[in-house]
Amino acid sequence: MVIAIVASAIYGLVVGSMPGLSATMATALLVPVTFWLSPIAAIATIITASAMAIFSGDIPGCLLRIPGTPASAAYTDEAYAMTRKGQAEMALGAGLWFSAIGGIVGTLSLVLMAPLLAEMALSFSTYEYFWLAFLGLMCATLVARSSPIKAIASMLLGLLIACIGMENPAGTPRFTFGMTDLLGGIEPIPALVGVFAVSEVMRAMASAEPPKLPKRKFGSILANQWMLTKKYQKPMWRGNFIGIIIGVLPGAGADMAAWVSYAMSKKFSKTPELFGTGHPEGLVEAGASNNASLASGWVPALLFGIPGDTITAIAIGVLYMKGLNPGPTLFTENARSMYALYLIFIIANIIMIPLGIVMIRMASTVLRAPRASIMPVILLLCAVGAYATGNNLFSVGLVGAFGILGFVMERNGYPVAALVLGIVMGSMVETNFVTSLIKSDGDVLPFFERPVSAVLAAMTIGALLWPLGVWIWNRTGGARLQPRGAAE
Image (cartoon, rainbow, N blue to C red; front, side, top):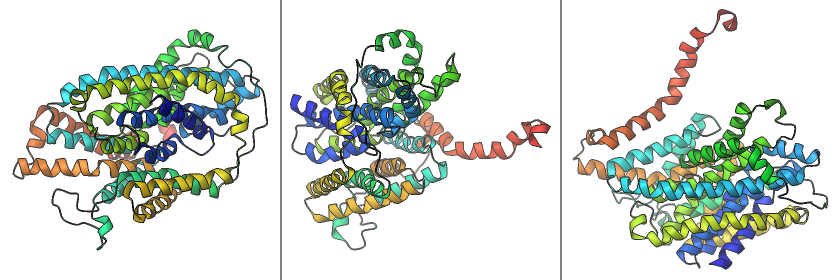
């Protein structure tokens, strides 16, 4: 267990620090390794590697102005401005220190929220689970940074892919085109590895090599962090809170939390004019927020099997593979596993500090590694991992096909996170919908009669109609409320 945590921590730090290699890709490449680990050790590797990768993405952003992960992109310019002012140690130390604090606070939210919600969820029936899964899909399209139409299109494509095979309530072959390999459906793991890892390799091939980092020596990394903690207490706690809330939203993730927190920090700051000039306030809030969202994203994943982000989407597949099926009974039947999971989160964020300091000091060596030697290794790991999941070459072909699909979607502005959510949650939506209709003998009224089901239905329909309402407001009411001069 200890060896798995330390090894995955080092792996996550190295992968996250390399420009273009995301925390999600690091997690996806770990899946084949989890086959040979115990359930707790397998989840420990995912938790540790993802937390480390989210932090280490700050290193190339601060030193090269190239974010290592999407979560680091929100404050890359700010961190790089601090480096140009000779404050690289303070910027990197802030990313490390407040990421660890955010991760621990997010873990405490997981410890407090999950068991309370599990007790409530024990009374859920298939009607509530259907609306909950549907609401998760709608939330994923609302929080997407791209066009809502493109997000919905990606989600629908994911649902279509989830329909392939015989694993449906009717037990009839769908979209198999006579291929026996498709009768079992599309496994989420090959799809996730292809979309997040192979597509990254293709993007790296299509882009220029990042500049090499010159060798440099760093001073004390944590020298000024206690001073920043006392000075920016309010932004730090606000970042933790925003990260927890956004983490619970399906499909949002650490990058959304970082962008929202950095924007909020600038809005409520007493000195907003200093943002962009090398001001640490935004780093404090966004750094705390992105790691806080990682832990809280496990709340819907463990309770309902609904991924809070793309990392927990991969984790859900590993949980099912290891017999730890997500659901409220997980907290009663496998209570020891849950306590172990909480402890792993705390350990991962504590060891992040010493290992992170070592990684920062080794950054000039790691970031000088040639891309041409890294990408073939990643592609080989993808192929080996895909073969291990199904023990056939068809899975390898699936990984390649989804890699091409992910590359094309990203190039055209279609969010792959919504696609992944559709693939992971498609069977959950369909199974609960069909089962509910069978129980009610085809009557749709029970979907709205139960109190919790009615509330979830209202929220889901509101989320579904929100883009339409905004469009109508902009075309009618919003235009009429403008002053005459503004309209002209």
